[in-house]
Image (cartoon, rainbow, N blue to C red; front, side):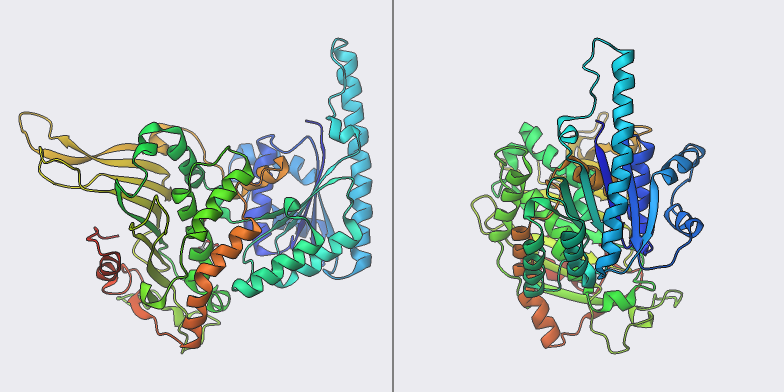
Length: 506
Ligand code: BG6
């Protein structure tokens, strides 16, 4: 479509923009997925020359010849504006720049259509969609900023740049607050400036291929639908393991901890998709309604449901402990590992333990969801092992089903094998897009399904805030575990005890 689209990346000189936002925008550009009339503005306080700006935004792109060939075209649509985050004049300048470029794009689009009209007299000749003809351009304001700047920048946009005659979309990165109160406050402030329908809160896990796939697996396959409940599922495990520590991010992580960093957001989002009821439709509000409903049925987590850990140096001393990281006080009690057992108190899930395990500096790089089925009923065959469905989010996207089969040959023994759909072998040659590309495309399409709604966020904080406050108030000591290990000693036993269920090692 010949839409007139402007994307403004605030915080354009920062790390997030360099590592994620611009590479994602480039990926869309290279794949011809950005609307043809698109302009990207980087906005930041740094005094960057054009070449410095270009060096930053291309720092993480151009790995292949094909990619490198697209860089000049991409740079052509990128501009940089230096400005403060709270100064009216700077935002008025931004507005003027946006409008000037929109005029140019509109002319280009008009030319394109008249060329199309002359070359094909049977067509209407107008490829500009009706919204653009009516002067409704798309403006995406992407806040790749620290949370302390969210409100100030949103207010500046609203006061000085926002034009209700266009489509305005405000994209915000996590963290959305620090606890229930701060998050509600933030939502309220943003809510006075932008309606919820214009706000896109990014949780990049929602843009991951396998997380998006959960909905399809569940609701497009009749056999999963039939067994997706407490009658057939004994427990669900959601595991996040990183093989590296905070490595220089300790200053940030110290005020956050593993629960806020990945559990309250990424893993809880995954859990709500695995657990949700069938949505009325694939409409984003129907999906978000169902996810929020699940969260409403989870009680706030108690301290005795949780095992906390903090990594120390590796056994051979080659890797540092968390407290050796810059910005981490020597007496820090910030958890870098947490394992907990949650319950969803509704008809579908009552009694099924949900084990969440997340940690930094562990023995593997792995994010997965394991759905363990109950022992089969009837006893024609001996109980050797349970069926298990595994959705591996990373590093290698896969879905596999642990299934009992007869050992091949003359043996009558059973063996546990896998119905395996590892994406790399099943869909040879495909490249799976980065979560950010998917999410930015969703923003351009006005699709909210993979973004966190305000009430959903509030529920997520409600579940964890009392626990987080108690950990901080009582200065709860995490258990040490060595860098590169499986986590604190006794973590498996703890999960089994809390779940009341013997589970395999996770
Ligand atoms: C981020 C956390 O939100 O997610 C990081 O702040 C974590 O600490 C990262 O490493 C994990 O994301 P991914 O996409 O690498 O699994």
